Image 1 (cartoon, helix red, strand yellow):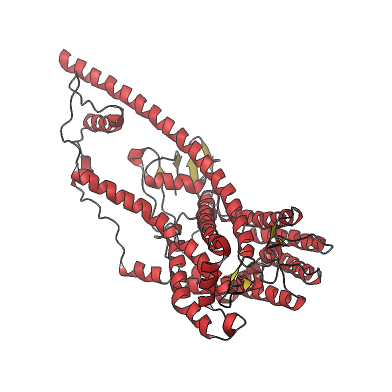
Image 2: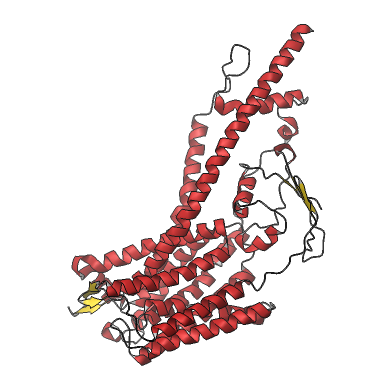
Length: 526
């Protein structure tokens, strides 16, 4: 009996030491993840602003670089349809980012199957397995299981292994449906590119704020949504701001990288029309693509880029080659002439500019998705506004810094009507922010308890049924949330009604919890 008690006491001390060591290790890992997450946020924000501003500037510069056409004349590369192809090529690079980790996991899994870990472990002096620091957690769990009368694997040992996720026909159909919003995006981007030929970068960026107005109108007409006072106030301010910006562009003096007054009006009209098409794209995605939560954002953007490349190469550019227009040979856009200019430009400047633009577009999309995932869609919309301001500032700096291309200055000058443009931009930003807060309402809550404090909340689901209670405590008592709940940035208002994770990003903590790397200390009761 004495020997048995000594053995049990020694094993309890060993379990306590292992528990302390494992807890310290987990704490160090949490601190590392916290620092890494904060660093990732800053990199994503700064990177998105940088690459977003550069992409806007490069979109204009691509039209100003020159090459030899089929007649041997040095002409600007006014090829908006081909530049859209370059944009989709950059977006399709997201597929490589999506596939790379999957390929790495598959390769690691194959390596583990070829060289499985040994089934027998060496033992220490006291008969316990000598697992090292990496095996402390597993050994501790086995000790706790034995102390609780478990038989090693517990109840989970009899459960069959989970099947790997598969892609059924419904998911494949939904993936193919991405081609529809891609067509919307293609048409809208072509119209914006043609409009950019005749206006400055700052006017181009600011006029894109018209998307808010059309999105609000279409959401009421086709989705049956209701607008509130803040929505109408935001729409009115946005309309006033866009009108002031467009007026400043038309009344201001012509610059070397813009068209005539008539061409500027045409360019502004095309940009506004493109925003109506993009607003239709948003309504389509919201209505028909709600069940695509199984797809990661990188896959969605990559597929949109791939479908865009196929549409451009197989349909759009061949059709533009046959339609009449103002390009070389009386074509709407002569693709043969475009390829000849790319190949015969001095120092391959056109090829370098287009390739650089594609890379910039890739990083801009990737970092933009990171910003949305870490900080939310509202914060990204604020960054987009900052991007417009930075593009204007950079354009002014290039002009007054005497940066030239083929002897002509790059960027845009400040004139008397720029004050009107600045005032319109401020009003447009104000309207956008007010509209973004139109849905902010005191959300009904449910009763829940947060370790040490109690708050009374109510939550009424749209179906009127009671919300399932979720208890998130220790790992042993953890219950997975309902698979029908999507913790995406778009559902952040619903997430806030349930969880309070402090200063750390709620979406990031929920992703850590679902991945099993972090356990929020929170109890939610019905």
